[in-house]
Length: 178
Ligand SMILES: Nc1nc2c(ncn2[C@@H]2O[C@H](COP(=O)(O)OP(=O)(O)OP(=O)(O)O)[C@@H](O)[C@H]2O)c(=O)[nH]1
Image 1 (cartoon, rainbow, N blue to C red):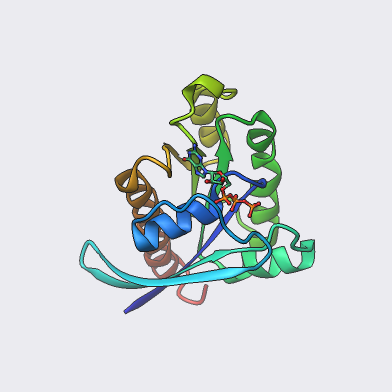
Image 2: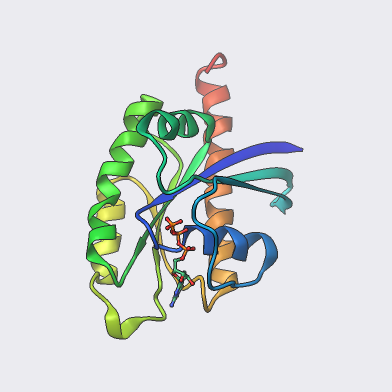
């Protein structure tokens, strides 16, 4: 079993908890208790590897110190924004910078997820803006609806797991002590 630890980050109400629950249970549940920090655990076979997965969904009122500690813990990051709330998109560069500073690396496995694609009528962020930001921040990019598409959620998380597995192999090859 290969352990993989993922952290999901984003502004409030972007669908972080919904995405974790959707990935682990396949179900979309509308409302959650937002106060608690929760670690979701499950196993998946990704390509040939059996992966022991943990996804940490931090409490929305986490202190910077506790956020940094969660970032140090994680191998890969899901950065979420909602296409219906521009301020959640504007929050992404700050979070990515915090990840890079805390990890002391510009190469961190990260997937930028534009959520709530089912709410086209309320769209405030275009797909092209999301793609451009992902390119600028060296992230993969997925636009999806946690509410409507389990397969898209699964594909985003599996893509991140693959990025983590590739980066751990590169790390062992290039610098055996890292
Ligand atoms: N229409 C729609 N609603 C969604 C989608 N994903 C999540 N939501 C809703 O958005 C709201 C916030 O979802 P949460 O999963 O609680 O968001 P969160 O980012 O964990 O929120 P905090 O814990 O406050 O940071 C809930 O009412 C969800 O039902 C989606 O893809 N489409």
